[in-house]
Image (cartoon, rainbow, N blue to C red; front, side, top):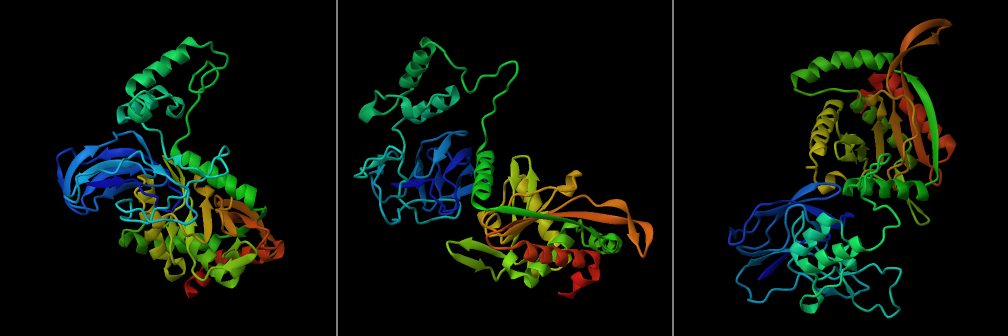
Length: 417
């Protein structure tokens, strides 16, 4: 028998929700066949079978929350008649240990059995339960009724929580006096909405960034009249290649060239060391129905403006459906957020930790400016940049911003590399 586990893939994904189960009990599967789809805070991924055999048990249903280490199903591969328990106890280890027979979005992986100690951990680090012993039916019922299964005493074998235990817990709560409103209640004035996994991830990332990095911002405006004209000229060529050409590829190209000229903006801090990144991977903030995502254009310095446009279209389209690969949402060295697409001008963007900076571009608007001692109407682009003051000083950030401005105001310079 072979346990199909939800494995730790090492990208901060510890919890998922069963989105779809592709197989049924009794089905024969081959190595590589999709077994189920899991929705995480970052992607919706197909989980393949690592073995060939017959599906013997399916322990979860669509909509169930699963944690790293959970045995989702068991496949009879002819190796043994014994099945490893899905509710096993994992001991605290000081070094990661490879756990055999586990799959994840990227196939077989090394799974750490290290368990983060809670605030109540005893000094001798005795074994802790990965999760409560409970039947899948009981788990689903607890989820549907909003019962914390961790607090339910099980009456089944080995203390397993049964369906009847969940019902009993609900009845107990009903009989107790209510002093405070339940978190899921909807009153006349307030609607309480439980945060999605993606919303939680965004909140954690933003909190990490703001509490770790001393943010400082610099703002300016740049005359992009020539860029507006040049984009109109190139749009025809792009349309012939079925490419949607926005201003974002030009912004990325300018940032790439500026990062080459000012390498400390393409860096991160690790302890007492500043890590200067040789590769330039640009993260682009994308608004999706699920929340903010930051897909990454790898080696952006190797791409032309039209190639950047194609990459943006592709990443944006797949971000909307949470079908990006894990490697496509990690590893950025500098990020750009385009809030001008939503009509905004200036803002103070939050740095995508652990990067050194993030550039915010606003809405291009026509403004009266003084040019050669005469007032004229020009296209003006507002720019805002937050930077890590531990790595970059204000003067260096100003020089970086001036380089970006020079490139955007003279678009022919963008074609020199």
